[in-house]
Each structure stands twice: as structure tokens, then as C-alpha cells.
Length: 163
Image (tube, rainbow, N blue to C red; front, side, top):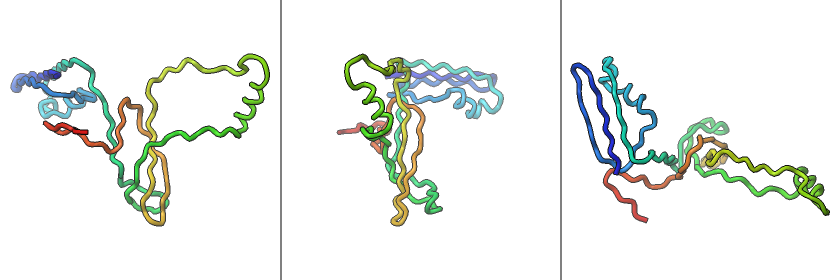
């Protein structure tokens, strides 16, 4: 359990809220505070968020979405899948050149990169139009995220997801 304490203080408005919740999902606490009615009246804002662990950002994308199709000129439903890199061709010019240079006796001829900095990859979505005469495909980039789900069940309030 994580305990979150949020406090607002001013001359005419004072409230303290403490609650126990399963997960904390606060992207930018300042944005949330600026949208609060007491913040719009020019009230002094003090917010304290105490958490045992960092919030987990899970990106959940539905398997179908209605988005504009350039070929149809409409907003039909699109089937959403995650893009995966295909297998490298053995007959590409660079691969043939590399294999020729590596053949025979001798050491490694080209540098091998080892200084990888990023631990997570950018998510690419592949959108396919489901109109009968269209079927056009396009790519859509999502920012970096540690956990990505495609159309899975979300856990609601007081619900338990069973597998």
C-alpha cells in the first residue's frame, strides 16, 4: 500500500486528505494543482506526495482505433498491432561487403558497438485500415515506455483481474 497526502492551505480554504491506494498515477502534480478550483482563485498551493515506490507508467492501447485514412479520406476503424523489425537480408549490399571482409583468417575488421545507453525502446504502432477496398497501412510512434499493453483488461476500482 502507498500513502498519499495532499494539502492545500489558504485563508479561506484548508483541507488535508490521506488515503491508502494501490497505485499512484501522477504525471505532473503541478498541472493537477493548477486545474484545481482553489488554485484558480489564487490560493497558495502546498502539495506533499509521499510514496513508497515510484509510479509505474503502463501504456494501454486499444486493438482498434478510429483515425483518419489518407487513402479513403474518412475516419474508418483501424486495426492496431505492434511493429516488429523483420529479419535482416543476407543479400543486402552492406551484409555481402561485411561477410566478404570478414572471410578468411584474421581479426574482427569492423568495430562492434558496446556503449548502449537506453534501456527501453520507442514503441511503434502499425495501423491497418479495415475498409473493404482500402487496407492501407501506416506507422504511428509512441514515446518511450517501460510497460506497453495492447488491448488488455484494465484493473478497475476494487477489481481483481484473473488469468
